[in-house]
Image (cartoon, rainbow, N blue to C red; front, side):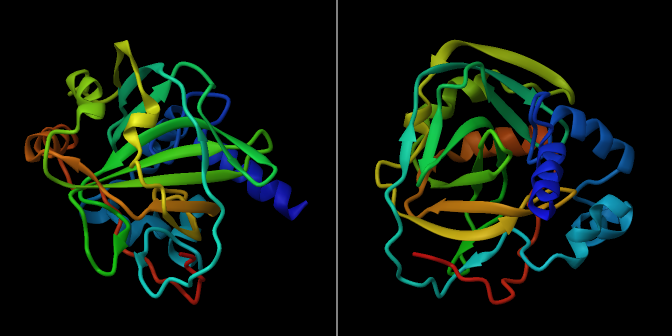
Length: 257
């Protein structure tokens, strides 16, 4: 029963059954607007745990994300079975991030005997997770879920370099107004958004936005993709604030390498 409640909470926080947004959904986003959370002043991450009874785990949780990835334990992690197909996508400005939602359910991640389906991906600038104390200019969170509601977030970190051609079509449709949505007319090659080298770190964590629900499996690629300064600048200008949650205590969690 406890696990079922956790999964139901995750589903509610991610809005599955509706369109999914930041680590929250469009539905949850409207609820979150009512709770008035954000990234600055009295609604900043420092206050999330006090803004609503539903957000208390943001303050009291012991497996919160993001984290500084360091002192990883060398274990035999399984190879990622990412099955990606080109897809048309919608691009939503939900006021907290830019959320991209595939129009099909053909992009999956298989871990052991569990199959996760890509529901949406979104971005944070600067990055939320760090590696050995290094922060990156942008981070993408690819949110996968199983039919019974288990969540894995696959993280792609971006460093400054050449323009990211995989994101170019998405960036060209990025809505500048909150709650505005656009559709990319051409298919997006989801597999081209991931590094060619898929070595990764793995740890248990949480959503990085209210309600900060725990029980989320995190996969962070070791290799970074490149992105131009102009692309990051455009994203930051649209969002208007740094939309990264500060680092959270590891609290003895095992980080696998």
